[in-house]
Length: 386
Image (cartoon, rainbow, N blue to C red):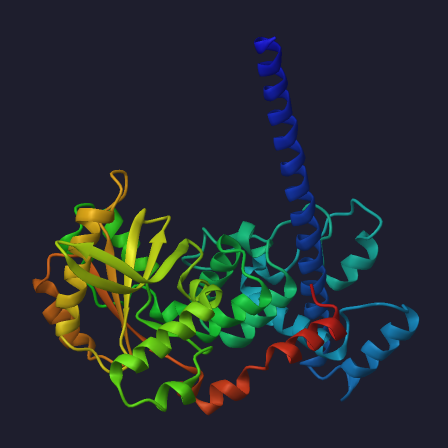
């Protein structure tokens, strides 16, 4: 009987794996074909509109005609057609010799050929210098709305590749991707002032930690008016802490998906001395506790000593045998990076210092460039963007 159950388990596991793989391939194939369709349409529009073959207002007229001739058609508004043109123009460097190869192997072939699309078995091949390892798999796994957002908020190809990979790895929704683009993750990664390489026994663990944290976080859910209405610094920091706890889901999304929140004001009672850590997390990829201390004002050297003491107690009394040594992070309003880099070297506990901004600190230009969530939802609903 036990042997029979084992056979059943193996059969279920094999069939389940085959089903999941098939579902993945089917979903990927649908998205890939849609992206290639949009690319081909964008190419067709670009070649005819940019060179003046079409008159002014042609894209609007084409969109209107499409809606009439194909009632219920979604995703082909004039704005979306322009987005397709941008999609082609920004990624045509990936098109081998700037030609989408076409194979006559299905009923869509003849129509597709006019647009220069291969809706058969093709995949783009890159001959872009230094991009022979272009992440095509990730490229075809995110939807057109994600691509449009990335193209609208970035200029550099390395930056675009970064957000494409992050979107797949972290399974970003449209709004999550918008948040991370707004927070400028690309330029804040691996910039955190820290002493990880000097204090961690594993270089690999230290490098992983450096890439987990950013040097600046956008906490746009903080009530700035309430925070600034208090006089006492300790009360200010408690208000900040409470705002984070109340919005802990947003805070974790800002920090990264591998963070799990343990609690705020985590009580340490060692040697009869009561101490409280502002926020305590556990990071799965680093396999360690992460203590976060919140400071309303600019960085002060004394904060490192306080945090170092917390880490000593955490490692001595709280850390599990299978966990790595704890890491500390000071989150303050401002700092001089070169100064922090200099003074943090003399501490033997792994720590880093980051700053935060609230919505009040964002530039007016950036605020205007970012529509609110409701506007984005209406945009998606009206255009049917995938």
